[in-house]
Length: 437
Image (cartoon, rainbow, N blue to C red):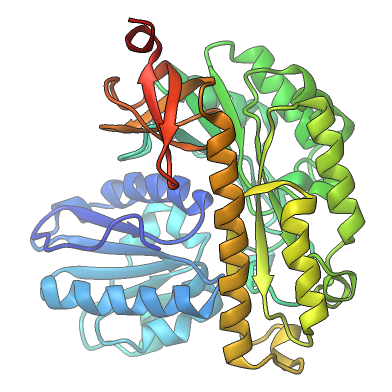
C-alpha cells in the first residue's frame, strides 16, 4: 500500500511510497535529490510515485493512484519510479498521465529529475531506465529524517543474488550490493543525533550483507559494530531476514544485545518441502522450526513474523496444510499472507496454477490462523511491563513490534508502560507511573 495517498497539491513535491521499508528510506533520498534538481520550484508542483512490484496487485494500485493524482493535479509533473517502473518501464511510459519514468538507480540522482521531457514526446524519451544488473555498488545516502516516521530506516543492502521462482524483485533491484559499515554507522549517528531512538536496518536480502565488501563481513558483525560505535541508538531493529543465512555473530547479538529488538520477520514463504524446492528456496520446513526454537532458547521474549504465500503453483491441500501448521510450529505472531500472484517473466508464472478460488480460500485460512496466534500473543502480554515507542498520538509499538494503545508521550519517545488489557487488535497500555498510582 502507499504510505499516503496523493492529494491535491498545487506546488512543491509530493512523494507517494508503495511497498517495503527500503522504499521508505529511498523516498527521503529522492525528496532531497528532486529538491536539488529544482522540482520544488515548479509552478504546479510534482508528484513522484515510488512503486512496488512484489505482486500484480501492488502494480495495479500504483497505476490507479497515478490516474487519481492526474485528475486531482492536472498541471503537475508526474514521475514514476521504483521496482514496478524498473521491471516494466514501457507500461508506465505508455500512460498519458505520466511525464517521466526513472529506474531504481536513476531515482537517487538529482540530474535525472532535470530530464523531464516536454509534453508530446514519444514514450521512449519518457523512460530513463538502465540495466539494473550493471550496478555494482550501493552508496550510503545520508538523510536527516524520515518524514512522518517515529523510527528511522537505514539502507544497508540492496538487490539479491538468489532467483526464487516466484520473485520479480531481483529484476527491479539487481544483484546484491552492500553499504560499507562505516557509511552505515555514519548514517545512524546522524539520525540518532537528530533525535531518533529507534533505527531499522533495511535491505532486499539483508542476511547476504557484506559478501561483496572487503573481508566479507556478515550482518552479525555489522549489528555489533553499530551497537558498539553508536551508544546513542536505544533500539536497533532488523527488517525481514532469511533465517538460513543467519550467522554466528547475529545469533550471539540476538542473545546478548538488549538494544537489538526481540522481533524477527522471516522470509519463510511456505511450510512444505516440495513447494519450497519448487520456489527454489534454500531452506526446508525443519530448518525454519529449528531456527525458531534456537532463537527462542537464546531470547525467550523473541517475537516472530513471517511471509507466507498461499496457493503457489502445484500446491495441494496437503501441502497447504503444512504451511498452516508451521504457524504454530514456529510460534509465528505477525503473519503477512500473500495469495500467489504470477509475475510475468518468472518461472512460477509458467507452472501449473492453483484454482483462483482455492488460492483465496487458503489465504483466508492462513490469515485466520495468524489472527488467532496474534490474539493469543496479546493475551500473554497482559499484566507485563513493556517499553513502547510512540508512533503517533495514542499508538505505539513494544520492543516485540506489537501495537499498543497508550496515552501520553510525544511521537518518537519511549515510554515505560504496564499492559492492562487487549482488544484483539492491540494492547491497552498505561504509562508505568500512572499504572502504579
